[in-house]
Image (cartoon, helix red, strand yellow):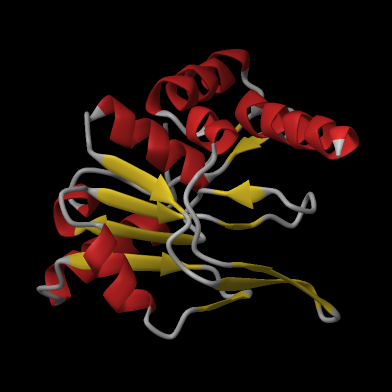
Length: 178
């Protein structure tokens, strides 16, 4: 699996030119709790990577646990590469999913939750908000290491992003049940 020169050189540059213990990855179309650094640094204790959930664009009430709001330790950055896997038909497994697959393969400690207040801009007129909250049973199961590993490995083998597709189907089904 290849990754772009830009992504490789960006990580190498950061590792060479700073002594920082963590990298905080955030999406540009979100507004985060002003105490984002303090909260994420507190919550990552005992872990290698922390993912804080954020509202998804695709569906109302859906929460994503990707790198739109994630904190990674320096040690992890030295061992993983940010990349996407693109298949011939154009389907893509994004950088958040490949990162998570690498973390599982390396046996790293991953923590997921909704630790911050986040406003995610869907477009110039619509914003979705989320506040800190515990993960419910559904989110705990769907974000578990075992389920994510099966779905992500299956995606690579089938050359289709089944992990994302299945999540969207389940959220749509739940939305119909409400």
